[in-house]
Image (cartoon, rainbow, N blue to C red; front, top):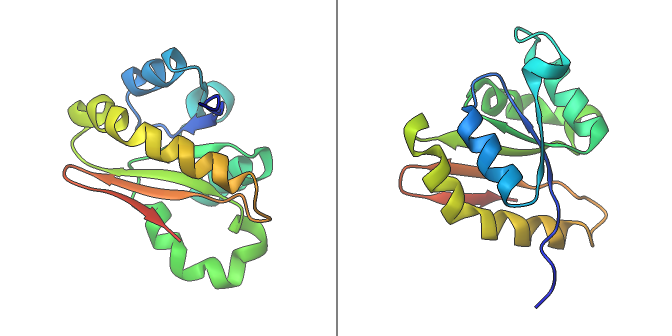
Length: 132
């Protein structure tokens, strides 16, 4: 069996610390927004920082979904942004990530073999969806 990839995650200000702790225990790296920039940083700044640093953004912020229609205009800027967007209750975050992480790791590993390394996941209370 192949080794699991180490994914470099970036947690938005609305992500519970318990989720970051779980990901670290699984061997991934986690950078918290509040440790590297102002917590009220505009979404385009957060998205740009993650895309340029090849970090996978984890967020509950639905504004990142609202940015999608503008992707055509800003594809150069955000076209490489990888994101895991939660749409479930925060107390369920770790349990939902436990279920989704093998899929995220597999998609991430596969993406590393492609020209576009972007992965986008939505995680709800009853679904895990890979976009694209």
